[in-house]
Length: 430
Image (cartoon, rainbow, N blue to C red):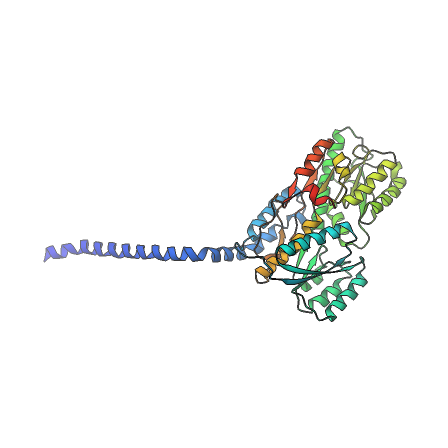
């Protein structure tokens, strides 16, 4: 009896071992079954849960962070919100109605080409209604479009004036068709009327230009230039009055240079093209030449090209007497190639139009999900690959490109600087 009892511990151990072995095998089989089906769901859940915090942290470009440091934020945002692997962006022929200022402006024409090319690639149909940079005209067009009874899948609304256009934005939203605001974000109180914003961050654009101008000042000093004042006297050539982007770019420029500011001796509204840049700069040089002018910041490169012409006609040398930085690459690249313009932001109109349509496609592909916060597209040489949910604010990249005094090196920069599958020369020539 005592011997039989002594065998119980051994038998118990064997039984426990057998039970453990069976359970372990069963668990392995269950895990194998789960792992084949769960990763996509788990990844999507993880992306959705982490998207908003990650995107909020990507808002660094609006702080005092330099454009160089914002690249990390852009990359982080792209990785955190770029889920949705395997999601198709095919629109199935969905209709997109675009209300925008006139494409007689080369930049807007290029924006439209980018949007239409992306629409064709992703199976969307596009209807474009243009106004002559006139908010009253656009308001009438909005009323007529609504009265027609035709409802697209989505509206893309590029206001002629972001503040004055709020009434039209509200009317579009009341149709219960989602509205994407492009290029100029609405005032905060009107945010509720848009599904999301897609376009440029003009504050960040101004920061990029400010960082380039700081480098221009260092380069000018290194070249032996004697500044007219301790910080350097600067002219600012802005967009047309009332254009929200102009105010944002000025604020971004001031933010980026606040620790080592320039002496801004004149800041003047102008327009968008070479002619207005030339006329405004000619007047400002005549009025301020006696004070000494060291630097000129133009809100885009078309204005900068006109400014450079005016500088030359005044008997001054761009890149020696006056150092020029632009805000957005635009059209004529000869000043950049010749070394007469120190630098520019690679914020291409075609990529902005393309980005709007891709954001529309992501919006529908992810059941119209919109995450809170901001998303900055990563400035990669290759085309974007994000297919996951979009954010409330979605921005295209704007890397700074600094040029030299060597035309051959500048030619190489234009031909070999790549963004989203195209060279800087290709993106900025229109």
